[in-house]
Amino acid sequence: MKAVVGLGNPGARYEATRHNVGWWLLDLLKRRWSATPFQEEDLWLRSAAELSGVGHIWLIKPLVFMNRSGIAVRALLDSTPLDLQRDLLIVVDDVALDPGRPRFRARGSAGNHNGLQSVEDALGTREYSRLRIGVGGAPPGVAQTDWVLSEFEDPADEDAVLDVLPCLAEGVEVWAREGIEMAMNRYNAPLGREE
Image (tube, rainbow, N blue to C red; front, side, top):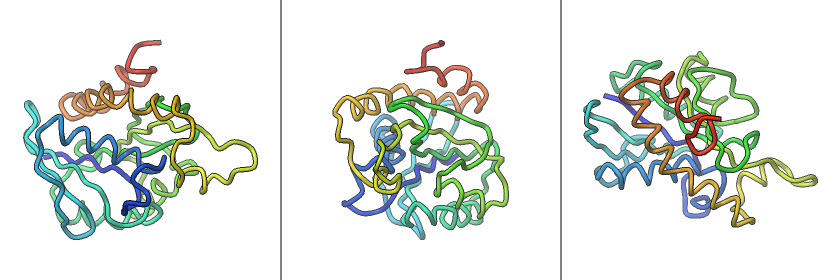
């Protein structure tokens, strides 16, 4: 059993924002895997699938705001037999990466990401896998909070993210079947190609 948790903000107001690109990937995975419809359970929406070579895999969208994501992730781990380092993948946006640039990591700091900081605080560790999806940084004079809570203004930036999602769906499958190190080796270059 594995779980892919896309951090984001609940509600229609946030669906198309940079902060919700993790949910965008989960929506693609749901279609790709013919997973069950998302249904509300506890502090999250859950979709379930059977993935060849893996077995049960859940797609989780926390129903708490980004900066409280750790509450939902902690509750998920308390209620589900998951190995933190092997069975959990957190998917988030990243303003430090160019739009569409992916970065799988086995561990690491939260950086300036409030969602990852909340997860780190709730779990008491940085030892969990994550996939960061670049959304680009805020231009001068724009607060980072306003930036991530807004929609893409430049169609090229949004297209860069949308174009990489199918490749990242493959990357999630590699993570699920072969582990985070293999996903890092294959997908940390732009669009999954080696640099």
